[in-house]
Length: 239
Image: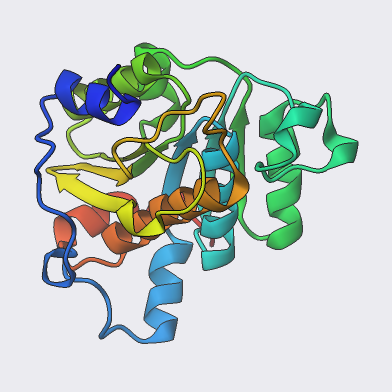
């Protein structure tokens, strides 16, 4: 059985041997920027997050802590007790829509972050509608068909938008196998093989690593030196 990672690669014509992101390929990685310059650029960024489970909720927290100015949060689900072992929610939020609960938690991290929430299941049309003014979208779905849908929608119909996706994060250990692969405007994070199952549950450490890897990929894009892209992404953030 193919992993979600392999299925997404095949369905979207992404080579499994696409180059890993090396330091000299990181879009002009902003190592020479001052802390104030980094803060200002991130404060003006607007990022969409599709799916607010283990990946999306933890990625959103990392982005809020990093100083991203505006986040668009979309998920149809509610918080359940079974989510608490790996997702950024708390016991008193069980039963709440994830979008609202996560917005509350992010506001406690940084009250200045601008949050737009939608409680709905995304399809191709809604992806375009909800994230039309986001320069980067983080894919954080569970199912391969949903991953395929949003990746294809962004790459085919949103030519100015980047997509950061993930697959391959189940189980524990073998952290060295987790990597980032770039193909055009798509960055894919994960180990490329681990499927969630009875013997490989989604546990907090690896889920968190991939979620933070997605957040780091967002920062790599935003702090890059491509002026045309930067002008597209620094909209709607903190004033």
